[in-house]
Image (cartoon, rainbow, N blue to C red; front, side):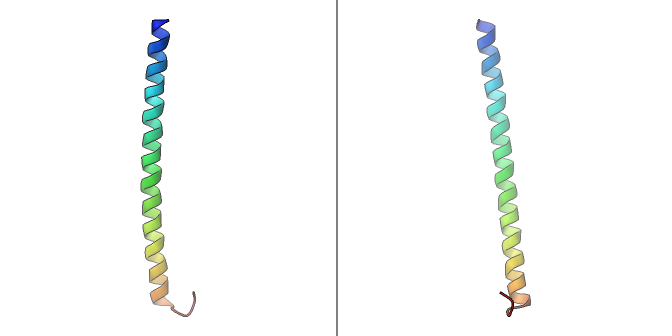
Length: 52
């Protein structure tokens, strides 16, 4: 029974670690994408102000 508890704890810990790693990479990717699309949009705006 004690071993089972240990297994559950370690599985839970690794799942939580994996999930937080995935979340942080998703957030980082989202920020990067957001920034570059913002940059592209403003560049687009400067290049051709007639097409909005």
